[in-house]
Image 1 (tube, one colour):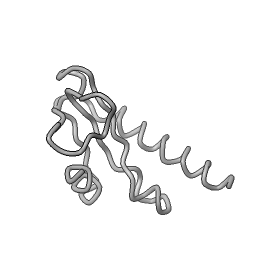
Image 2: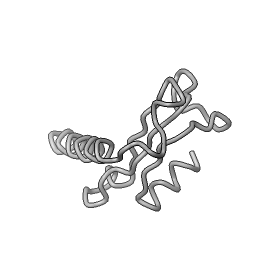
Image 3: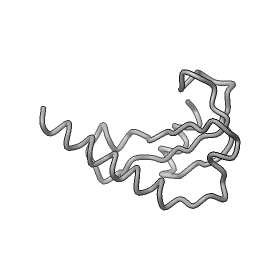
Image 4: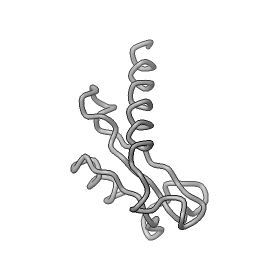
Length: 88
């Protein structure tokens, strides 16, 4: 959870091993993970959220992997969440 707060505050991207010492984010342990802050130009609560993906193997998400796809997914997820909130 602290790692995600750091990612949000730094507007950073994390790709690498999952830290399974903290609270469980997923129903099964993840070997690797990807996390990115959702676009900060979107309104709260979207701009204060993160997209977190779990990998089954250690090689699913690694620091040397490209970040373009993850950035695009975060932008799409943010816009979809905004559209959903606006329909309420």
